Length: 343
Image (cartoon, rainbow, N blue to C red; front, top):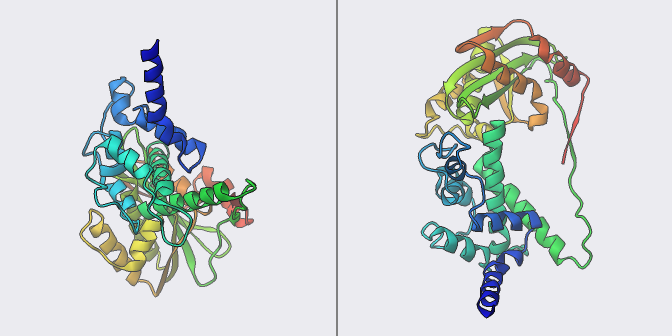
């Protein structure tokens, strides 16, 4: 009896640090699941015979264990390296030690009230959410975005926890809609799409005038690649289409912030996307005016429809002189200024 009580007491101390974390209950529960090996990574799902492969869906180079998913995958490293601060042994500890040490590390983050211990668990949670967004929705979120969103959430949480009256923080509400271009510009919206089941990617887009009228559209069935490569592929094919139509004044709009930033920075580099990016820069320079800008996904619904349509197309590019039937409601909403609330 006494031995059982001692074991229960030891277990309580072992888990107590999780419930003392300065983060939301949802994040605490996620950390608890991590600590117990209950997060359904592909490695766990494969062992339970509910997944066909244990490999990481991002890099496809290693088994998706918790430590790979949250730290060692190239994507996760990019997320962590956005931070101005990382402990010196961050990439060298075993999983349990890494999880515990960083969750209780009290290093202050600049002038804010946040500490590394308040930020670290939220980044873990955000990495898990972005992974699921890729797996289930085919959406690739830029590493910088994942980290900055986690940082904002951690800061808001700390403000609430430090408040004497735990009232909800005011949130910024934003109405998002497609905006028509000013003449003489036409607008090209593009998007990429990737099926997790087949791992095949497609892209698509459409060109519209200042009244929202259809000019031309396209889909391209690419094959096996990442959703980010699909975003760039759609951008390139959309620019080629616009040039073939003799368009000289163009606004290129995408919901991939990383793709927009890469194009605007005009730095090709040596990545797997360098050839695509070089093509995009050459094509954009062929216009009299070509403006590249970012929109939120709510403002890119028509391009998202075209990209998804590519999964039903034959390999290669398909040009649409007339709009496909299913896009008419989306285009009508864009024309009348239908807005969507982004919280």
